Length: 245
Ligand code: F6R
Image: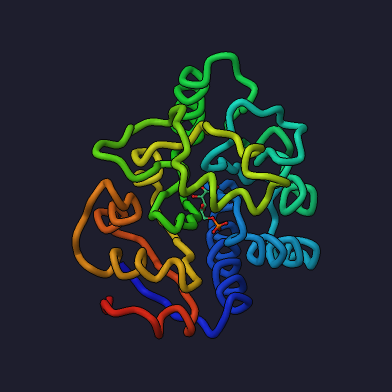
């Protein structure tokens, strides 16, 4: 694993956007795996700026988001489809039909997972996957457990995730209890992975990533099995780590 320490969140976001710019400039029809949450917002804003300046062209790019709440209508302002439109897709020249998010209103969520994995495969697999990590080490919504599901599937959110994500909702009761998430298999098949982790509450996850141990109780540790992963953090977070990369 490569470990990069940036000055602060802004520099992390610029750095990550630069990685995406290079990938897309080298392969205009690149297939990108994307995430929601607070972590990628700065990178998305930077990518929108770069696109406006003509420094990146998304016209042939395909994107696949990691996850979506279930059940949820894509037009709901709490859906991840809505989040992606607001934070990225509406501000870049991607073709709407090329910007994929699992369908939170599919009748059969597990069938939707299978359809999603097939679409990723048919697109040639992910050239790149951007990741954040939960404070519990979840990747996508692959939550800590004794065993993880390989493919894209319906999952229950843990109490911890519901608590943490309640900051985006009026009240905790409004947080959906389920989601469709890419499984660890399509994520680990991505040719290149960048995971951005910052904040005092995520220091234990960085330590776990640096520890050399792999456990499904901290799904992020599985990234150690991949041969092209970059972990990006900021100086304040790195200073609190007890393990070194
Ligand atoms: C989001 C996702 C999650 C988040 C994680 C971190 O699509 O898959 O795994 O990356 O929960 O969220 P933030 O960035 O809000 O701390």
